[in-house]
Length: 153
Image (cartoon, rainbow, N blue to C red):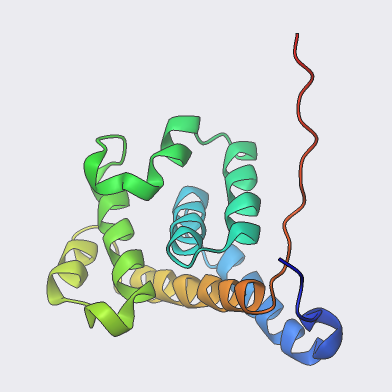
């Protein structure tokens, strides 16, 4: 797979706008684990290798467990996520797949049980933001870095 174009160079003002939205998400008061959950899950759904690679590494760097990270793609079958994380994962799935889901009331009610209206708004902005990044990376075939394999002992 080869990159299609470098969107950073092609439209720097567009990149600046998305970066400003990203800065808002980082500073809106949501817990870091929730931001990691949003970014990683949406990136999995969207098939964005660049973003999955980045957000796995960031989650690990922030101390989230390997199990928490690794089981996210099968979260419905795992007991590792607490009730608020499960509600958030359901919302991420519904919002990211909006054309298929229509965002059911049940997903909203589950989220509402754990988050304030302001948090729900910020969560939804965060989902929209990572979906924008995913569309840029997947659409233009942005390549993730390839880590050097660890030497066998």
